[in-house]
Amino acid sequence: MEAGLALFAQKGMNGTSSNEIAQRAGVSIGTFYSYFENKKALFLELLKDHLENFISGIYTLEPDYTVPMREIISSHILKAFTVFNVDPSFHKEALVLKFSDPEVKRLFDEVEQEQLAIISSLLEHYGKNSNRRDLQAVSKVVHSAVENVAHYVKFLEYPMDRDRLIEELTEMIYHYVNSLSSGKGERVA
Image (cartoon, rainbow, N blue to C red; front, side, top):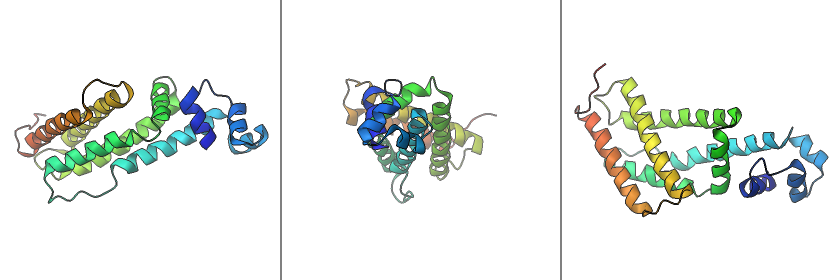
């Protein structure tokens, strides 16, 4: 698996062969096939593990609601940005495949649904004046905003200071969530 991860990160899934993986791992191709049907099966297994680690890297602790909401938001954004440092080349390859491979997309979609449920439960404390449907929509907006900015910083090398972007993202999400909890952002059904 380590050999596959390194090769996929370096050469992409399409640029890597099962023979190369077996050779780098120091095993025969028969041994490789006794564990994995093909290189894509290995890639999907690696991606599943990667995405599970991704979630646990961001959402590890129950929030302490005595801590100000802005600090909780900032902490989660910082963890999200930091977790993109784990196998970034592999993650980037997986993101590219997300748009062309239905199985890769399915794994990303499953993880996103899990993330949205976690974000929704984290925000539920602050969104007391919002109905459940609004909380799900808020979760999607928050998730998308953090993911988009993190992708720009990590993968597209956006020429702006990372900490400055995290600070502004924190402020934006804080005001958005705060407006919902204060009733100012109530939605009309």
